[in-house]
Length: 280
Image (tube, rainbow, N blue to C red; front, side, top):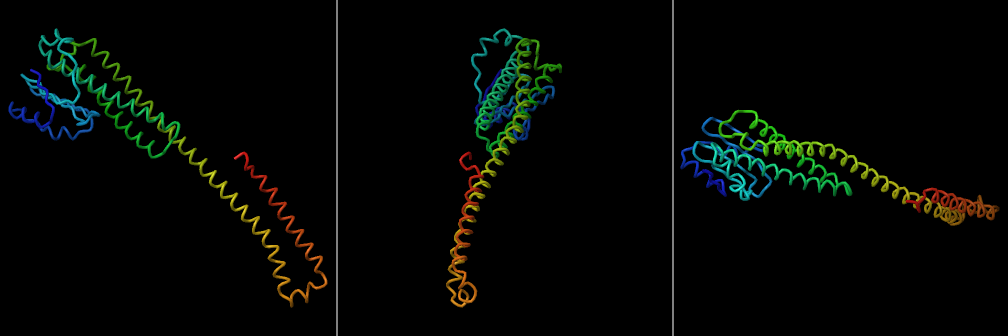
C-alpha cells in the first residue's frame, strides 16, 4: 500500500507505528540522492528544489511510505496494469519519483541557464560566481541521480522490477544523461562569463585611467599658463630685483614671457587633440 505524507513528522510517526527503525534525520542531512537497500527495508532520498526540498521513500514488505511535495497526476490510470503485478506498486512509485525529481532538476537548470543568459549581456562577477556554485551543486545532484538510475537497472533488486516499466525507464535514463551533459557543458560557459567580466572590468579601468589622464593634462596646462603671469608679477613686484637686473630689458622680458605662455597654450592644445576625446 502506498502512503503519502505531507510532512516529515507524519512520516516518522507512521514509521514508528509500523515498527520500522531508520535514522531518517541522518538521511535528511544529505545533499545528494541516496539509496540504501537492506533486503527487507529500502530507503531512497532525493534533495529537490522545492519549498521543503526533501523527498524520501521507505519501502517495507507491506507498505510504501513516501514524503514528497511534488504531486502525482493520475498515475493509477496510466499504470493500472503494472500496479496489479507483483511489486508493481513499489516499481511504479519509485519510477514516478525518479521522473519527477529529474523534472525538478531540469527546471532548476533552466532557471540557472536563463540567469546566465542575462549575465552574458551584463556580466557581474559576483553573480557569475553564484550561478557557477549553483550549477556545480546541480551537476553533482544530476550525476548522483544518473548513477542511481543505472544502479536500479543493473542490480537485481526484488522491490524494483525494471522490466515492468522497461520502455519508460530507458527513456528516463536517456533523458537523465541528456540533462547531465547540458549541466556539464554549461560549467565551461561559467569560465567564459568570468573572462567576459574581466574584460569589461579592464575596459572600465582603462576608461577611468583615460579620464584621470585628461584631468591631469588639463590641470597641468592651466598651471603652466597661470605660472607665467605669476612670474611676471613676482619679478616686477620686487623693485630691487626688477631695477637691478631687468630695468633695461623690460620689453624683451615681457615678449619672452608672452611667447612662452603662447607656446605653452599651443602645445597643450595640440596634446589635448591627440587624446582623441571625441572618439572616446
